[in-house]
Length: 135
Image (cartoon, rainbow, N blue to C red; front, side, top):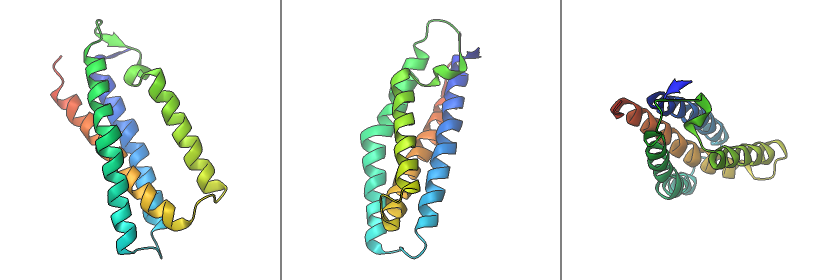
């Protein structure tokens, strides 16, 4: 079991690892597909995921973690069941899209770069919340 504050650090690393990996895939796909339109699409994807999903998600889970009544939790409590399911579905869908070549490379480039950047920023925000957490 870990302290509640540590759950935020675990979330930080999980989101950073996922985000950086997805950005890497997107940037590798950008080779040969660098256009102003694709860059704009990456920015749009980032904004949609950050402002509509991940920023709120970090806030929600920080409040949930801070609200635990006991001082220590199991390390996997950095997410709730709903978020574990969402992450599993997103990972399965992303892997399936790439392995089965269901989307063109330019889509992978702009979508993964935008999504991965938003995930990375969520990891950074979890890290900031860890540093500012009142124990």
